[in-house]
Length: 281
Image (cartoon, rainbow, N blue to C red; front, side, top):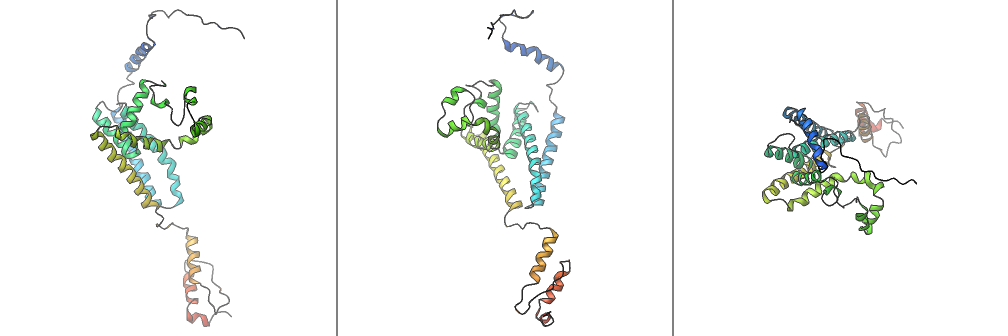
């Protein structure tokens, strides 16, 4: 193979040789600000928050109305999309993109994170800001720290037992594992409560517990095993006809008509003692 040598190039005209690469961001930032792309859009966010809340309320209403029907599964992908939209609203609040008021941003984050998603807003905001401050830095970015997945050969060498097997197969297991990410985010939020100041911990914990209780109550009320499952009309008519025409020891055969809205009356008359004497022998 031919040897490729690194060739030193002169810095572009108008730049300083000792200038840090990070300073290249400054002209871009000025351009973006000059075009008004970083201005907060209060009206747009107010409309999106209201529409998202209305859509979530509609899904909850649909779950309560459908109950134990299998049709309720059609609302699952709708709820998934709305949950993601809810997470993005909390994300933008954490970046102070919705409003410059920290108290209002925190309130929006607590409602959308803790109450609606069951994920600690304080925990996520702290982790996410550290990620933005040190993206992909192995020792500083919490998103690439060794946990279920590893990202460097050094991290992989330290794995033993089941975790070692998991690391060897993480390329195949990545997408199945993402199905559990929602649960992992909720668990991490509860675990982080011990780190938070007492006042913040109380508010966060109350909202997280309220989410869990509300979600459980929604499922128990709408999909309780004790709640009867709706049946198609043909099944209901057939079941009534079967109940109204029991087998009788003195009768060898019954000629029950095809189930109709009034078939139960005919069958019920034939099942009475008076109708037995006139039965077909």
